Amino acid sequence: MLQSVHITPGNKASIYLLAASVFAISTVEMLPLGLLMKIVEEYQVSIKTAGLVVSVYALGVVAGGPLLTALTTMIPRKKLLLALLVLFLAGSLLSALATTFPVLLIAR
Image (cartoon, rainbow, N blue to C red; front, side, top):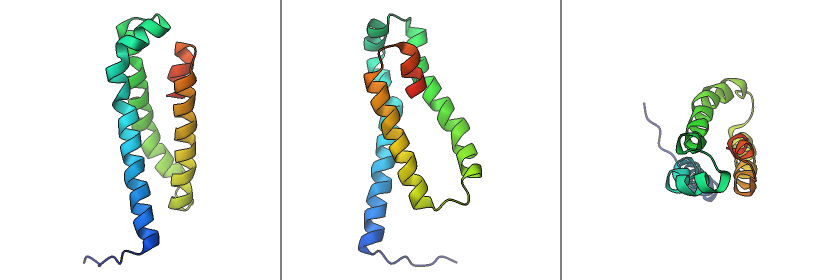
């Protein structure tokens, strides 16, 4: 049976944070598609190799999602989300500042 949910200011902020997180993660996943030629030029790699920035990220999400879910069952969800967002931000920052292609892949 479905329960009604009472939206409080705290819940509302959480919903906005979750929506912003989903938007950011989805955007970052697909962003390199429009930048592939720039990545090829910047890092002097083939287009196939540059495409790995998307594939590696997707593989990390596919493998990491279920694994993180299984390993973090005892951690409160809010704290986990905030910690993962900080990690995501650090990876994104490292990606933006990457001077070599391997660093870019690891940061992704």
